[in-house]
Image (cartoon, rainbow over all chains, first blue to last red; front, side, top):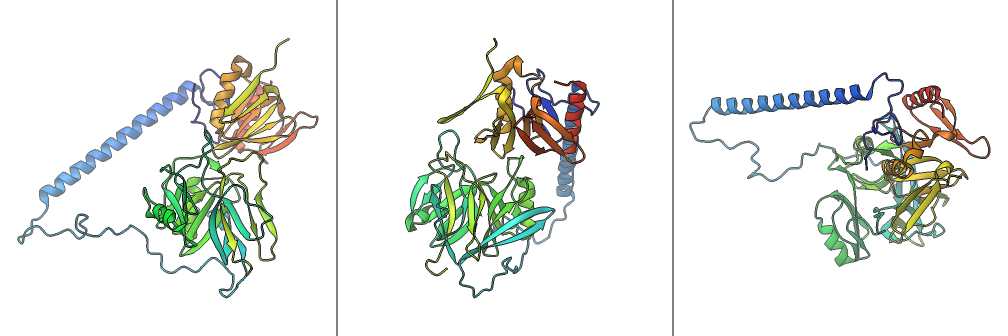
Length: 316
Length: 123
C-alpha cells in the first residue's frame, strides 16, 4: 500500500493515480522535475549540514589547542553540569496579571469566557471559577447543573476503545503506560500540569483518590514543546498561567506548533493538549446559560473521558 | 449490469460501508475524518484522511481513477459533485443539483489547480 503523507496544503492529487505523486496542474512542473528537484534539495541540505559539522569540529579542536592554561591548575567552569544543580532554561516570567476579569471576592460558580487573538490566532479562553476539577468517564450530563465546564481529556485508542496513556479515576488506575509525555494530575482538588516520562502524581493520585491523565505536552516551563502531528485541526488545551488554570480552544484549524506558540505568547507556563476537533464539551456562564462546544455524536466510546469542573454545591 | 463499488472503513467494532458514487466528500478532523454522503449525513470515523485516501485507491482500483481528488491536507472530494468554484472567495460548492449542497472552503492555490484540472480534464 502506498502511503500518501507528503501532500501540502496547496497541492491536489488524483486518487488512484499510479505514480502517487501530487497532481501538478497549473504549476508547470512535471513529476520527474519535481522528484529531481527534491533530490537536489536533499543533497544540498546534507552538504550544508556536513560543512557546518566540519566547521564546528575544527573550531573545537583549535580552541582546545590554543586555550590558555591557568597557573593555579584547571579553573572550574562557570557552568559545570556535573557539579551544579540543574537550572531549567526557563525565561524569567515575573508575576503575571491574571487573564480573568472577575472580581477576586466573587463567589459565583461559573465559567468566564474571554476571546483573545494571539499571532492572528483567535483563542477562546474558558476560566472556571469557584469549582472543583475532576475526571469523569462516560459522557457528563449537560443538564447536571453542578457542572460548569466539561471538555474531553485523554484520547481513546481507535483499535480497542481503551484510554491512551496512564489514567487514574478517583484513585483507581484505569490505564497504564506512557504514550504522551504531558500529564494532568488532580490531587485534593488542585490541578498540576506538566511534562515528564514518569510523574509521581500518578502514584499520588492512586493513593489519595485523585485523578491523572496523559496527553501531548504543548508548553513546558514557558517553552514550546514540538509534537509529531503536523496537520491542522481545531485545537484545545488545558493551561496553567501563573497558577491560573483555564481551557483554550482555537476558533480555526491550527497546527500544534502554531497553537503551542500562541499559548507561549499568551504567557502560559504549562499546557497539555485536550481532545480537539469536534469533540463534545459544554460550559455555563455567569447567568447559568448552558453553551455547548459541539453537539454530542452518537455511539461514543465506553471509556470516553472528560475533565469537568463542578461548582461548590450549593454555593453557586 | 455492473455492481456499484463500495468503500469500506472498518475499525474495532464498527464498519462504515458507503457506495462510492454516494460519497460526496471526506474532511479531515485531526486524527479523525468526517465522511459526508449524498443524503447529507456526516459520520465521524477514526481514520486519518491519508488512510482513507489509501483505502479508496486500494478498494476501488481502476474504477476510482479520476473520480476522487485529494485537495491539500484537509479534503477528499468526489469530482462528480463539484458544482461551483470561486478561487477569489476560496469557495468550493459540492452539489448534485438536487438535494445535496455543501459549501466548503479551501486555499486559493488548491482551488486554482482544481479549476484548471476540471477545465482540462472534465469528468
